[in-house]
Image (cartoon, rainbow over all chains, first blue to last red; front, side, top):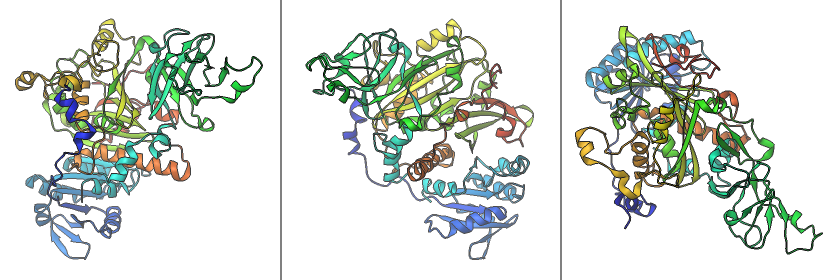
Length: 157
Length: 428
C-alpha cells in the first residue's frame, strides 16, 4: 500500500481539498511619497481595486486621498494590514519616517517600492533607499512600474 | 495569487505551449555525462519538457538525443543495439544516427533510398562541465553554448548531481527563490552540515530569523537580497541570483563552495532538480566531494541505481517526529534538499495558486512570476529572445557581503555579482 504522503500528494486527491475561503480580505494602503509615486497611485486608483486605497503624503502626519480629502496617517495605518510606500529615485521620500514609525507602532507590515530606478543615477536611488530602508520590511526595485499591479493582484488587493 | 489561466500558462511546458516555447529557447541540462560513460554504451531514456527521448553515445563518441520510439512500429529504442555509429531497433533492425536520421532499413532492397525518408526528431546534445546539455528549440534560434561559471571551471573544482522531484517545476523553483523559509525550515542545518558549518555569516543568520528582503530586477532575472543587522550599524547581505527560466545561485558561506540549482521540467507533474557546487579558485576537497555524494548540503542520497531520493514520498520522507520535537530538524525531515522537496511535493503535482495567500515577503516569488509572464508574452507576441539566453546573463555570482546601511547592494556588490576568473567569491 502506498504511503500516506504518496497517496495524499496525488492529483486525484487534490479534488478533495476544502473549497471554503481560507482568508479574510486584507486592507492595503498605498501611499505616494513623492511626485513619481503620485503618478503611479493616480494610475492605480482608477483600476477598481477592492481592498486597496491610495494616498499622497502631504505632511508628516497627513495624507491626501484621490478625491482630495485630507486624512490622518494614524487613522489610515490603524485600518491597514499592509502599507506600500511608493517613491522614485532622488531622495524625496521624506514622509517615509513618519509613516513608517506609525506602522511600526501598530505592527503593520510595510513594503517600500522604488520606481524608475533602472534609468536613474545610483546616487539618487541610494538616497531614496536610505529613506525607505529603515521603515520597510520589504523593498522592491522593479524595472517596470506595472509590477506594482501584479504585486497588488498577488496580494489579493 | 495567480489566476488559473496564468498558473496553467507558467506550469505547462509541453510542445506547443507558451512556457514550453520559452524553455526551448535555452540550453538545458539533460543528463550527467556519467550516464553515457563510454562509446557504444547502453542508451538512456530521457523525458524533458513532456517529450520522451533516448540519449546515446555512438562509436565515435558523439552524443545523440532523439525521439525514443522507432518510426517503424513505435518500439522503444531503449531496447536498441548501440553499435557501429548508430542505434539499431531490436525489433526489425532499423538503425538511426545521432541526428535521428534512419541509415538502415534491413527489410528494404540493398540499394533502396527508403531510409533517407525516415528521420526521428532529434536535438543537439553537447558535453560541458560534466553535464550533457540540450537545446530543444528551432535550429535557426540556437543560442551560444552555456557559460554558467560552474561549467567553465576545471572539473576538479565542480560537482553536479540531479534528483527526481515529483512536482511541477515552478513550485520547485519558487522554493529556491523563497529566501524567507531558510531561517525556519533549514535552521538546524547551518551548524551541522559539513558544507555549511563554521562560516561567520551563519551567526548573523541564527541571531536574526526575520531578515528584511530587497528584490531587484537584473538583466537576466532577479537579485534577491536578504538583509540582517551586522556590527557597527552595517548590514549583512545574502544575495541570491535567479536567472531565467530556472537557474539559481545561493549566497556562499565562508570558504565553502558555492552552490545552486536548475529546475528542469520532465513533464508538467515532475521535474529534475539539478544541484551544483563549485569553487572558482580551488579544487573541491575529497571530504567535500564525499559529503556531496553522501547527500549533504543541497544534494541527496539515492535509491540505489536511480536518481530518486532515498527519502521520498513512498516512505513518508523518513520523517522523524522525535527529531522534530527535539529541534534537530524543523520539519522532521533530514537534509536541506529533502526538506524542500517534501514540502513542495506535498502541494500536489501542480499547486493551485488561486488559493494561496502571499504576503509582502513573497515579493521574490511574485516578481519572478511577473518576469516570466512578461518574457513569455514578449516571446509569443514578438519573438523576443528571453532573458537568460545571453551568456552575459549567465556569468553571474551570488554573494554574501557586509555593507554600509545606505548602499544599494547592487552597487556595493557590483563586482561581486559578476563571475570573474581567478577572483574569489564574496563570502562571509
